[in-house]
Image (tube, rainbow, N blue to C red; front, side, top):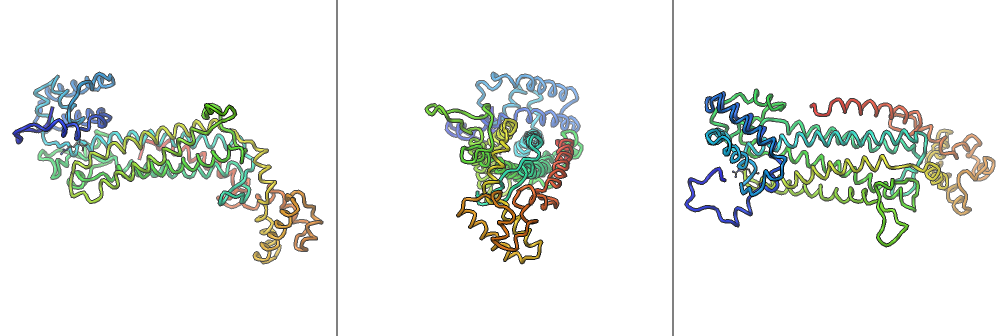
Length: 465
Ligand code: ARG
């Protein structure tokens, strides 16, 4: 079926129909389209276009469609141009007179915006809940080894020791920002576009604010031309999805490294790793690699729509139908990656002795020592030089920090007093980093408590604005 045709002398070609149809992907909007159409029937009743009995008929027919649509047979043989057309055709099979009037004062241009907004709102709520589940898993993992120390890296070289929970809290912060960013995308999504008409505003005045409330929107869009042309809310989501995937990808990369033989201080669960068909010893981090790989696809989705919208003249153009495949793909991959990431986190086990050994066998306390000298009055530049020489000498002799006795240190330079020798122990220097955001045990304990209460607050707010 088609919602147009009178002005044409011949039908569209089979090639054009095949090329332009969107039902294969926009069928995901079916439930949203039914919900929106039920609401539109109420608008038409209030406008005197449908009688109360007809509105009732529409409602019952649409409810029946909703009940049927989970059955794959629902779409069998459908050749409709898009999901909006399909819903009207199916409505017509049950209530022909109502179906003939249901599109009064409404355009598919606003309908597609409405459906996309309803669908995306629910997806954002799902994704935000999964972000919080992953954040919770990170906090659980932090609590499992609250005192463990691990190497912190810059340039992927051992830099300074940090507490295990401190490292995990870095990802907690990224996820908290992702949750917020998705909340902003939700706020721009959750506005009623109906009333925009094709581009000039509906010819049948109705209370848009009241309809917005009925459909759970926070408000209405303000300009009919902008509404017909706007996909910014989809871009906002795709950007937020891309950044979230970026964070998952960095976590994946970290853990692929940390669980390798070369690092060796993190163990991934058997349930999220796979073996090799040839090499019997292998335990491969495929789940993390796939998360890292899917990140590229989601970036592509953002890029695709960003590029599609560039230079489109106002208002609606059929190009905009191409918003949906990248939107659906990104939303699905993001939701799946978050679920997978939480399972990986719940499977992971720290090997605290291995991590601590990595800290102790390298010179990660060098900064603590240089700062200790500076605290004792040595100019930092000189302190840096002195410690650098100590490190160089130690590397030549194959000595770790713990191999130095206080009196031997004093021989290297008289500035190395016996009190400073305690900084050879990584746990000692760490205590000095006791400011908000630092890795001192007290600061980390406070940060963990803070994260747990923020997580609770985010849980309570998910789904709300
Ligand atoms: N399938 C279309 C889309 O996704 C619906 C809007 C069609 N409007 C039009 N003027 N052809 O954008």
